[in-house]
Amino acid sequence: MKKIEEQLESIEEVLSLVIRKNASIENLIQTATESQNKTLADTLIELKEDLNQSSSQHLKTYLSHIQQAVANVPKASEVRHHHHFDLQSKGFIISAAVLLLSTAISIAVAINNYMESNRLQGSDLKFRIARQLSPELTERVDSIYYEDPDRAELETQKREAHELTVLEAEELLQQRQNEAKQAREMLNKLKKD
Image 1 (cartoon, one colour):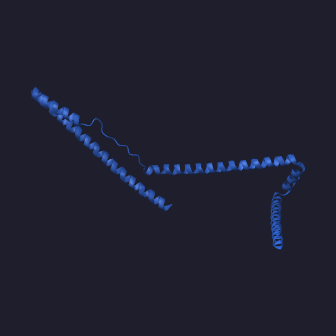
Image 2 (image 1 turned 90 degrees about the horizontal axis):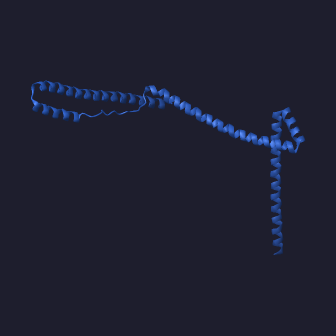
Image 3 (image 1 turned 180 degrees about the vertical axis):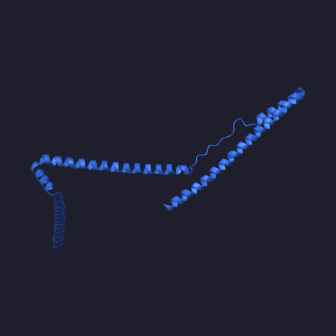
């Protein structure tokens, strides 16, 4: 967190330096434009004075000078827009990050709730089917659950574990019987040979 704050502070310092440089460049441009305008104004004043004193030939010469000066003046001054972050935009960046983070968390929670809702709908459908097939059994299950939900859960886990143990034992017995059968067949082959 300190590194991020240090980086933000260094970025802010660099940005303030860039802002100051930009302001000085704009001042230089404005000064150059004003000096150009002043030069043109001085030339026009001299021209007016000479007009009053000179002949038509001098007038043509001055007119050509004026036309050249006007041609050299840019039609519009070039303006460059620089987009940057300054000290005032720090709050905006933090607010935007917080909003993005809260949006991401909200979307994750919504997706999780949607998935859980689908799972619960499936369980509800299974229970309703069981209720239709065996109403007495589901009534008994309901009564056991509503008497003591914690005990019902423990009993269910115990029964499921017992059922898994029985299935594993049956599979092991079947496997051993197959091995014994194969051993007998092998023994019979060896005796015949």
